[in-house]
Amino acid sequence: MAWHWIATEWGSPERWRFEEYDPPAPGHGEVTIEVRAAGVNPADAKHLAVTRAGAELPAAIGYEVSGVITAVGPETETVTGPVAVGAEVIAFRVIGGYATEVTVPAQKVLRKPAPLTHAESANLLLAGSTASAMLHAVDARPGETLLLHAASGAVGVSVLQQAAQRGIRIIGTASARRAGEVRRFGGIPVEYGEGMRERIRAAMTEAGVEAIGAALDAAGTDEATEASLALVADRRRIVTIVAPGAAAEHGFQASSGSDPETARYRDAVRIDLVEAAERGELVVPVAREYPLDQAPAALRLLAEGHPGGKLALIP
Image 1 (tube, rainbow, N blue to C red):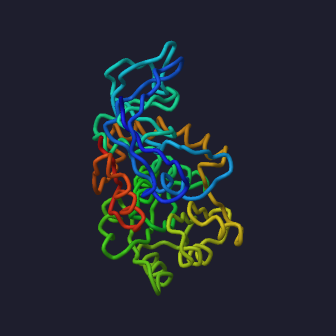
Image 2 (cartoon, rainbow, N blue to C red):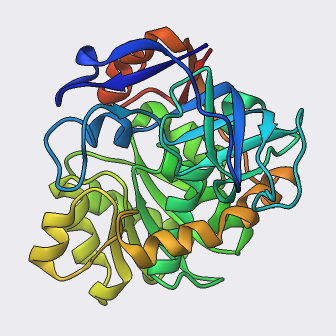
């Protein structure tokens, strides 16, 4: 028997239940994974907070895991090729990752990047593919400078690394406490808060930047929206992952994994992200690990907004 977290009613993670269950044996095109780490993401709680069209209860929780294959169904191959029992893998866009063991479609499974721990690997693809989709949405180009809001967050840190690989400079807003994290990954930090727009312009002058080519918003604040609109002339080159209402009001882009075209892009970029991690070009800062049975505590910390890196649940 295995254990997993399920939601039997809508609401906060405090209402979830940690229960024993029997994972199904893998069928055609499926594998069973012994979970070594589950990634913790805002969507884990957000998608179960209130009733959603098409969503039903009870619902298993968790979209991203890293672990070891314990069983392989017939005629099964993962995204990165054939797989056998004992292989270390990651899985992304699955259902029920907050578990000790889970059976998932093999086309959501890739080899685990060897340089990363299981806790890091379990947090690679959701943030990494979101970051890549944001850069893709604004047609980010080598040699230009972009404005990135919430640059020290999980998605922001991945944007910084992926932009650097493409020869793109980033001016990134963050708290003063997190400025060093922005510098660590090649960005130019600017403190958010009153006067932020003037500080961005001062950073541009100091860096010899004449114009901001595009803006990427992972913060969702009015301040971020106002700065993006003031500094980027072409609203098609502004994208947010957290403020769809502002995007609709002001005519810029909102990127979401629920959009079919964005979901296809995120799936297509998975192998590139794994290969970048294998080359040591993409790292995943992990702030804290929690025992699997303390999932609500991990999500409480995440809800505070400043965990200082990714969080992982360890069975």
